[in-house]
Image (cartoon, rainbow over all chains, first blue to last red; front, top):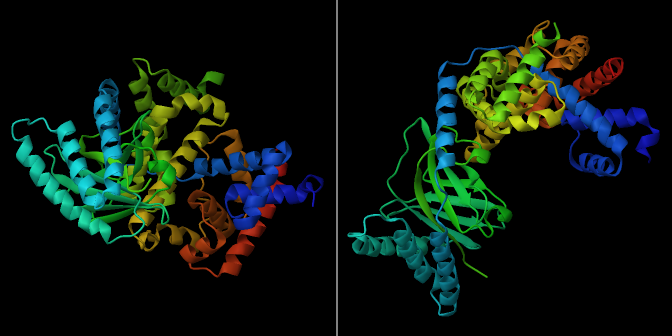
Length: 269
Length: 194
């Protein structure tokens, strides 16, 4: 069937495509045709533009004056954040070394618990400013991390794992990624609970470019977020920031303080 | 005066934000004052809850603050460009909530089902609308109120026939018929404005 010879049908499909009610196989076929033909693409764009104007026709409603105050604060915070440096390169190097150690340890058996202790240790070295009390903190952190790993073993198909620690090296959040389920599972293991007007937001810290949001955490103890492997693959570290309720858009990066941070490690190679 | 049209005023503000000069924040404030209530109406329509709509509005203006430089290449009327940003932030918001809780859709206000159930004659407002929106308005106005609502909602909430039927508690066949007839009439009417 040649859609170009049937302008009425083309217009009908383009309208359904732009409205969003053309679904499934019909939608995919239309998308294929649009990639092949500028005429098909143009009709889709015309309808997208037309429907976009539905947003201009909605009845106006007054938002609370607080909304502007929040925007103003966040814009100011972003300007400050742009001036602040990103994650230090030396720390990321250390985290990568940890990753290769993890892989080596896997051959020796019992890899998971060994590796988690190393993660805890390196995160501690990288982040703790309290040098004096570091040793005992690290020992405690290692012990707690080993316990966490035991929980991990009960779950099959985990290919990425991160133990996010606070600024005192205490493990606070456990993150695992299962590529088959395309799910990140986040477990709160510390006692931290954000205020009711705040949200925790999970970020991937890629080797280059700014942080990318992986999602906003609900208040539950265990949280699942949808993610595809591309979002976590080759990402050396994850972080969690404290944000206004509902989180902030990914493009601008975190606007609030980073509460927890840790290396993301692949459990299989 | 050409320079007095609302569109040109909005475009000038978006350009000043994009330039990120010393007056960018003032421009954002002015843009907010002119457009916030209209865009809040859009957010409210999509998410159906005042608190959520305020979160969406906040995200949308931060988004506009960052991507104002992309406005020119969109070639869209400024309110439609901003409206689409609000819609996609609102849809993101609903998806995030849905991934956190399965019962999100049951929490939607009665706000929307009321507007669809009642035969409100013409709730649309063209006071700030672009030429394009005015044409769409003229054509939507010719539809039955119910058809108009279902078409608007399908777009604003990005809903399939069956999702519409579920949210509006209408038979699937009815929704399909309303959408099909609505689109047919819209097509022949919009062709006159092409």
